[in-house]
Image 1 (cartoon, rainbow, N blue to C red):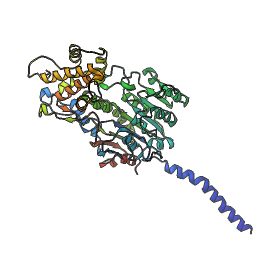
Image 2 (tube, rainbow, N blue to C red; image 1 turned 90 degrees about the vertical axis):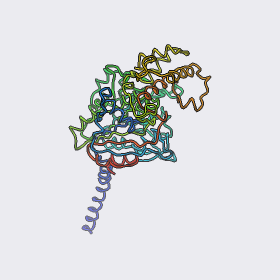
Image 3 (spheres, one colour; image 1 turned 45 degrees about the horizontal axis):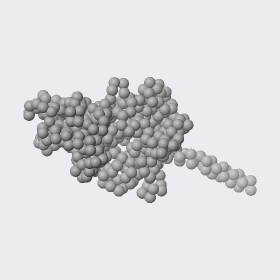
Image 4 (cartoon, rainbow, N blue to C red; image 1 turned 135 degrees about the vertical axis):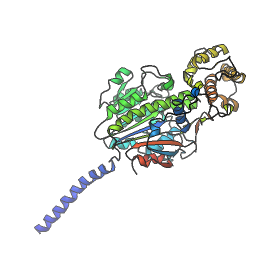
Length: 480
């Protein structure tokens, strides 16, 4: 009897040990990371044309008859793929659905962040998985941090416009490093809610709003680093508008590596969000400038990769294409005149600011001065001078001034939308003219269904070849 009891006790003891130990070992297996360090760069709105334009603008010299390009650092990555971007509802998606597809592996509705089609279930993101596994997580963007793309890596909401709720979830995420623009609706839509910055601080986040404080961030600190200089709607300035000493996405990636480097690994998503904003405004100069700004950020990740080649994966892709940009314009036939584009000194946003500073009513002479000071366009000169505006183009500027001065009195019909979209008529006319005279064109002020590329280097980079859906980026990052 004693022998039987001893055997029973032994079996019971083993069973109890398994009951306590096995779940722990299973949990570790579930949260094991196939890649120790992941950098996911998302050029919002960055299609093939935007990348090609950046390569061309940084490459040959038309004056010398050169048509060479300079390959961008990520275009030289050994593995490339083609990504389908349609979401659950539309062939032409938005950033909420596409970024959510990349972060969770699920196709969802336009405008929704990380929730199923019934809006009942929240999907867990790859950033959550890394965080739960004890790795560090960083979310960076040149636009506001509760905008759709960055939000898709830490939030779950019915609508991308629930900025305050997204900001609260940002604070609750516990992620280690946020950096970039400010936050939309910091005190709620009515301005009466608790400041999101205060909520973040109450959750242990250090908020830096100057470059000096940013540079003094210490490793291991939980931080939200905000760009010292802010441009439109809380975003960082366009690369073309940056001044000496301005914080850049490259600076923030470099600091993020410094803050998050640890033995358990990290996941970093860095968004070049204003490629999209530039293409919405049909501003080719600002668009290619921010592609080059993203390239500079990728360079910082590549330096890290060179030290950890067997443990690091770098991906560069886009959530969708914006603007329907094409390199070719019917009035220039097969010619390009890219020196015109190079002569543009400021973005559409800064043209907008200069025009608004003139008051409610502006004159042709005032606008003419702004154009000549900030572009290479000329209102007089020899006909064979590519910078000289012709009569049709001058009339386009004059008509845009009339539409601007008429304000709400002008009918916002289809013709108006085709010309100006929802933008300042004068500003967008200037950027469109520069693009067209350079030999470029846009088909829309919105997103398109054009496929986008993905470039990969490092561990498991070979998985990112062929044509696949954006939701498969999630699976491939996790080697599923």
